[in-house]
Length: 332
Image 1 (cartoon, helix red, strand yellow):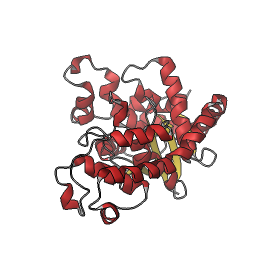
Image 2: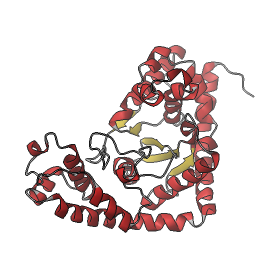
Image 3: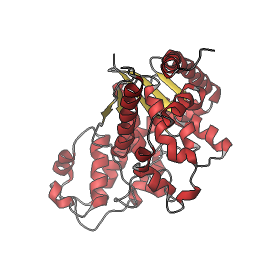
């Protein structure tokens, strides 16, 4: 069976964009692939994190994934820092990947901003850690959003260069899986920006911890325009907020935007928002309830993550031992 690796940063609670763009797809892939799901806390600290908050967020994100349907008995769910093979392979990849490759990474430029000289070395080199995350398990497929395709290309280049440098056919070329209508969910306050947990306004996103009343309030306040819902895609030209809300309805209903046009075309957004709210509550409320139950007993979450880390180490340690032998390290 092919093997999937995917990770999420525990730097805050998951939101609707994470759910529709990643977690829901992971749940659906569990019957087709062997899945390794990772809370990438080592990536998180490339930007400073409050230690207590990082621990809390790691458990929160684990609870959200379990509540959404990730099967931690059949598959692997763990915190990245619990498996030292990630960091060890990342250092080897630091010596394989080229500086020119990292200089082309657009996400570093976005995150570092104008004060690039003050960014951490980790933020600059973290694509090599991402390559290690994937290849330490010899993962064959990686579910990615459009903004992560560049990093997967780097992983493929690194795998190929390692194989060429050492004259081996060791690492596979992982393939991207880009899935679903909801892979890019935008802010409820600005349809030109991606929904993000770093946005200052909590009204810009639907959090997985939001209850029904909060979901209703946020959709009610979501930015729209004065025009009715169009009857086809041409009517969305220059209307990013309208396009976003219709896309969210399509993703939550497992439908298409064309079905949204057929159902809501010509109607006012006030009416549409009521139906969108009802649908969102129907989908998210059971997850929210289960998250609260899980977070009431963090010892259970910790036990799940510990078992997952042991499983992850069991898969990656033999691979890492072969890498060290290929590179020429002495056996301990």
